[in-house]
Amino acid sequence: MTPVKNIPRHQKLYEILRKHISDGLYREGDLLPSENELCQLYGMTRPTVRQALSTLSNDGYIRKHQGKGSIVHHLPREIGILSVSGTTSAVGNRNLQTEIIVKPVLVPWPDNFMFPLSEIEKESGCIYMERLRFLDGVPIFYDITHIANMNLPRITSRQFENRSLFRILREHYHIEIKGGEQRIKAIQASPKISRFLNLKKGEPVLHLERKLETNNPVLFLYSSIFCNTEKYSIFGRF
Amino acid sequence: MTPVKNIPRHQKLYEILRKHISDGLYREGDLLPSENELCQLYGMTRPTVRQALSTLSNDGYIRKHQGKGSIVHHLPREIGILSVSGTTSAVGNRNLQTEIIVKPVLVPWPDNFMFPLSEIEKESGCIYMERLRFLDGVPIFYDITHIANMNLPRITSRQFENRSLFRILREHYHIEIKGGEQRIKAIQASPKISRFLNLKKGEPVLHLERKLETNNPVLFLYSSIFCNTEKYSIFGRF
DNA sequence: TTAAATAACTTGTATTTACAAGTGAAATAT
DNA sequence: ATATTTCACTTGTAAATACAAGTTATTTAA
Image 1 (cartoon, rainbow over the protein chains, first blue to last red):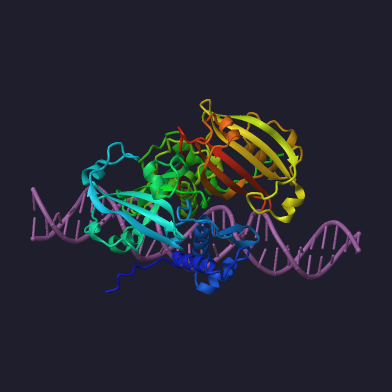
Image 2 (cartoon, chains in turn orange, brown, purple, cyan):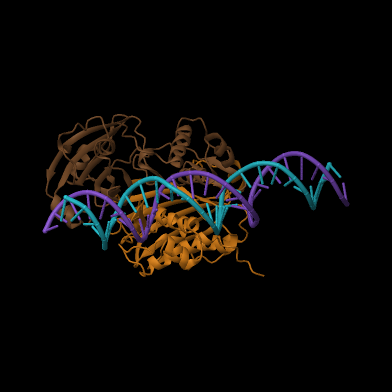
């Protein structure tokens, strides 16, 4: 039994090059091998190579210049955990620890939910969880997640401590994040938020409301995230 | 004299379809014509059509589903002026008015600028301007812009009142925005900011620091933007 | 010495062809 | 009637080919 799907060649090349950039093999400002060289190196044709480079460019890893080549973009110094661009798989988790405040439980959807819900979602009820995420030991993100309870058996009894929610969804349920949308606001920390994020009451907090799309067209993840941006900023490319 | 460049066919189709979506000709949830139908309709081949659809998908206008087709995504209800994804040309300006607080002037770069500067940029000095932007009469954005003073003749004497900075750069200097990066924070309104945005001192304000890349590889635009997110949120797709 | 032309690269655009894989409806067998 | 199969249609992947257009270094001409 080989459950490994046939991964497209352009995606394979994308991942190789991305890893090389992340690992510092290609550094900021470096020219990537030319498209024709990559064709030779990896035994594929130019359209395939170009598709890989196009994805890298969209994700902000390289910039392409006609006549010159593909130049490696500098990697963000700040946290990109909530990076607005880029693939989910590109999300780093250096020094990131997660504490579960509320383990996944099955509850009805709240009234006046932050995003409109489909009938199917309303009927299913939702899985609710709260997490607090630390960067270098400092609480940075307070994250409230809602997922429609659709074909996710035993999810409430899984171990979330040291594994990311995305990884559990991918490995156990074959759910991949494909895209999403978000609203960003600056608000005053409520007593609850300020307690979790170790802030004074009323201090400014970044509030993100996100709806994430998956490879299942009727399944979405919803997150309400409160960020302490005193020391760190949210970084994004576009 | 025809100064109109040859616009690529895939880009032409992208703009046609985007306009149809914006105008409501194709509505949320609608299936776009299939790739083969678009080939016939516009007299191009499938790779060309696919390139247009790929851009539309990246910009969040459609979602593609293998076996089904391209489905029109709903348009954001909130303001996307600072939309994190999407092309600059897609930025709407409904009900958006701009007031110039400080007309473009040539000044030296500030010390400890928010982004590192190249030697060329430092030598050139910079063009500085401040703008206040209103949505439905309410001040929402306070925008401080820095541009390196490179090949931008007479820019300090142009009329900025009713035209967007981007349009002036495009039409007079052939400068196009290609991408960029940004940091997002929540901060407390300083006295100056709170005065401009009509807020109480200390209220939370969204702060964005952006570096925009152009088709000129050494020319960047820098903006420090303060947003009143009391009534509106910043919306983004990814 | 200097400036212009050339050549050799690079990426961008576009066509053509072929098959794989997912979706959904119609036809068929049970 | 119901379940299964088939078929037509969709997008996804991949190759081979050709030329356009931007960049850079070299060569050539003034």
